[in-house]
Length: 216
Image (cartoon, helix red, strand yellow):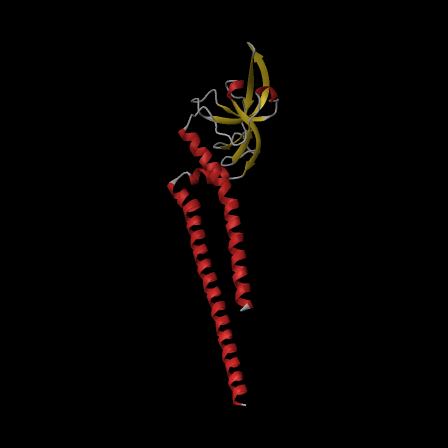
């Protein structure tokens, strides 16, 4: 009986550990992915942030080797006046369609007609960007990257990605929890049956002793 309980406890701990691991892996990715999806359906001029931080997917190799294509980077909202030369910043591309975001290094800062402007260049590029970046177009300063997570986030936005990365793990976790519960209930039933059998044996032994005592 103690062995059965020990096995049940071990299985429960294993399942709990598996659930925690899945949560640690899936929840941040889901939060980031939902943030990116929200961006695509809301105002494209506003980058959604969580506590002043925004996740961005890197699509080009212009900042290699520090930042690679397919990485997911985290940028922090910053006042343009606090940006310094050599900082890596994300900004709305003044040479783009008005919605695309680029992450490049600041190579120069100047003021014109009372407004700040930033000259930028990708570390892997031979020349600086064609147009300066107005202060209002700065999205945030680069903080860190998660290698390859951008590819995962983009894949998760597809139907196949949602099924493989979200639906399947959740279904497996639920199925395993159902199996665990059934095993736990079965083990408890076995323990209960064993206790009842022991009680019946004790009752029978007691009855025999009582009969023997009465016959004497």
